[in-house]
Image (cartoon, rainbow, N blue to C red; front, side, top):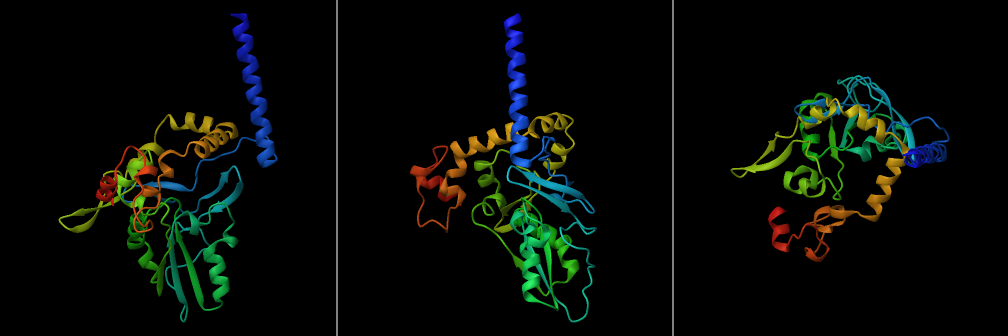
Length: 268
């Protein structure tokens, strides 16, 4: 028993030493990092949205960036729904790429675009991290139209934005379903809200604090990152990760879960 206790204590001290070393290596400090996204709040109709007036930070292994959300629930400077006379307003609708995950607001695409276009043109950063196109459309209908943009631009990526819009495709490469999804109903495109409230349930989960305490350490974060690089799993399936029309043909030999070309064709 004594040997077992000594081994356990030695292992615990070693893990603590490794954790403190990794914190100092990545962030120059031994303070515990916070990888939670503190600027999101549940929304039963969309899944989640940015929390108005939130002041938080976005932290990963390779960056540490302060994030401020304005009173309208957007990551940008304060502005009114009404635009000034003679101003041409562009609404840039997107997800984390335009939201500017990992960089400052001044380095973001909307800020750089506005600076490049010059006076008389506004670019509204209408982006929320991890949003699908369905969520972007719902948020645009609810809030975007209030800005009366002269031009609305949709920025999207074929790498994941197509899959996150459709529940069967999303279920193939991501464990949890937490969004409204698009589906066809009698030939019409509609939104399926069965999973739209999952984010709220996860957010209110009492055990979430214990999980966050464990996950908000560099060691498990680094382990998870390395595991994904070594064993990418279904995310490496080009038929799901890219798919039609970006591939000339389906490639079942690179597929996952034993799906055939007919299965992929059915999904797409």
